[in-house]
Length: 370
Image (cartoon, rainbow, N blue to C red):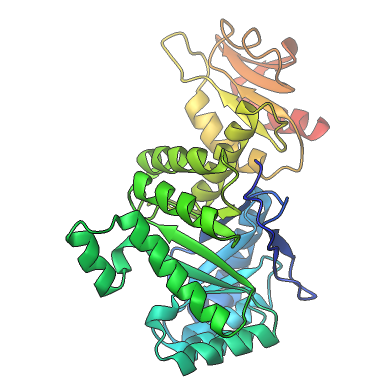
């Protein structure tokens, strides 16, 4: 999708071992997610460490460009700092209240800092963080949430003298003024609410007043289904206007599903605009009483593998020969069931008829040929 046409271009990463990510300008919308658990030193060692590195590599393969971690202590900062030297994925430190944690993170190749200057403390503490980030050319994201507005603005909202959307914008503008005071330009802004209306309005207002790159998200969006629906509606409203440089689908679900959801939302928006969709496009039928093939189980088993492929292909997973090859003639590869057999087809033409127990191996062989 076309991104918010900000005159500011933010570069994230850039260390020798870290992939660079660009936000703003004409660059594509950047997908990101957040690590769901506390990170300890033991998580970087042995089998746990191998599993963590493998999972981060998997997120990258799915299309995630940034991975954010909560950093509640100095020890957590050291752990994240060590991890940042072990992966190519740019890692983001999310910090609240203690400016010393931000300073410690900046001793490592952390790609970005997320703070709310209003809860970091006095002006001199903010200046220390900003000065150190500037010296290392590390960007900072100002994170503003509806649940943590300044007291004076909360009062105005409660008294119905100001909308919550305007309060979000006013808070962001106050924080931006702090950065301007220290002549720090390497900054992004997020303004999130659990309300679609408030989130959309806040981002529309600020995008009309500032060229700062915007990170989009519905906070506390909910479980998988409701969270995806709510996020999709908000992102559609904003991205259609060219507002948004990066986004996260915040779900009470896995990081992988957050990335896949974001990827599918961007793909659907691109398709609806007549743009070409890059990457693997999975289509699958909902299944009915005619089904001779477990589309649900097969799709769940293979979706992560398929999404991680660096191929521009459409794969169809269909339930029966009635709607299988016929309805998915455009698919580069498809699979469906017919009685006790499984059919594999390309562009509607059946190329293999196999036993059900051979379906996985045969499917993988044919995917590899594409």
